[in-house]
View 1 (cartoon, rainbow, N blue to C red):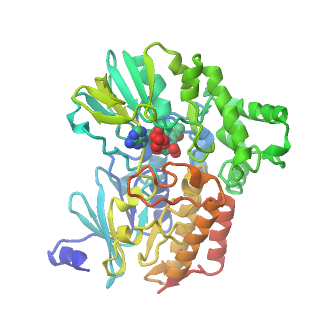
View 2 (view 1 turned 120 degrees about the vertical axis):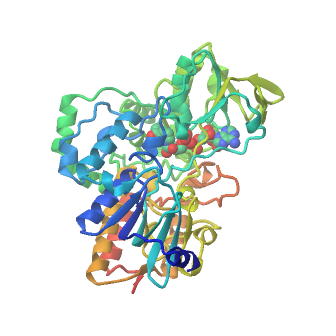
View 3 (view 1 turned 180 degrees about the vertical axis):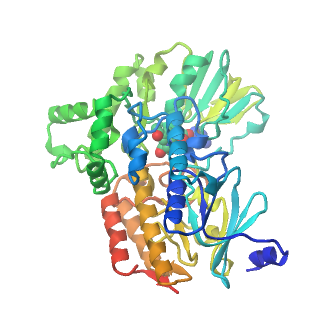
Length: 543
Ligand code: N01
């Protein structure tokens, strides 16, 4: 195509490698390691100035994972298990970032990444069957394979708020938090957003700011995370049973195994349900609650029983009943938007220096130079924290100019929603593999399990292609279309489509409304991938 030809015509000495990997988070680190293990050359690119991916950028106070630390870690390399010890049950962002630095260094892959380098485009050069990747410095790299390891939540979203540019105070987004931190001491701070990021940052801002105003559009179902230090015994037990843990995780629907009861929630009496939910609430692990009964995600009436249990916890925590009601989600099923995990979130509203403004009652009109005008009232602020989330899953992919055969733009191809085969590959985009792409279980799992499965499956496929001397591979359009429509049909049988959230893309104006994750479960998905591989990579056209 013209672009890649032009680069070569300029006489630029274009480096050529077997694989380009975009991103140095959990996916990119492991994928680069796999290329090296296969004896192939690889170049990684990363926009940040170090490894970490989402854990590099999301440095806001209180940032913490919603999966238990020992389960949120690589399982493929014994040295990474033996030589690392988590300190807390739910790991903080700094600890996860330290872990990823340790892992990349221990695997020896850090030098394979070029940091402070954002990929702006990747075009497929049909005649050479190569990807031509261009970075923000204008540098070009050619590769046989292109791996997008860009994460699902890496493109932050700042809504187009009227007047935002006029606001004289500081504005900071939770997902682009300055590494040096931000001091809110003595300031009147506003937070917009009460999703996972907002729920985590709000209690800590309340402790620091002179006054905190929370602007809530939709209340969250939140679970108290009960974080604590891990005991030596817990750590030892986990390391001793890591193989069993991995097998059970991969055989589960979400990458997090739990004990699901074999009766409908509606077959239990209210008292039985209460004791089931309470016992699981005390485990402080979301999956234990949301998978307590098998029908919580398929039956709205069953879902309402656990939704009401979560609301009762808000009423226990918040002293003012009216405020508790404002904080109680009523408009969507529990789980259709992601359940948040918190430390003292609801209790924070009992503080004298914290106010809640419901944007449903007082709509956000505009920023002014002094603050925010809501429902006709101006709230004066010195700083605003945007906890407004991400252009998820497809955002990081479509932020780059990716073009396949004949210059086909991924953006155009996905104008009505992403189509993929297995969530891994796209027809007309040969030799491109996506880790945790749309149409795979990605964010509906403990994403580390999804990543390990994807990277291992992709590396096995690349090894098979190399063995047979293949030059290009892409899924057939028919197989991609079928995978995509089957995945959408599966989602339509659940309560997921009822949530207005980044799961379905509705948080981004103009984005097609479609669930971008495979809801059939990691176990079923993994089996489908394995069957495709066993059947000589059925659905792929290899040349
Ligand atoms: O983003 P979100 P997030 N006007 O999209 C509000 C992961 N994560 O960064 O719900 C006013 O969930 C929006 O309101 P509404 C985790 O997977 C994990 O919090 O759209 N408000 C919502 O309240 C999570 O799900 C961890 O009505 C606006 C909030 O902003 C995902 O990242 C920690 C608005 C956005 O919530 C995203 O979480 C952090 C507008 N125009 C993140 N636009 C853990 O591991 C948006 N909002 C624990």
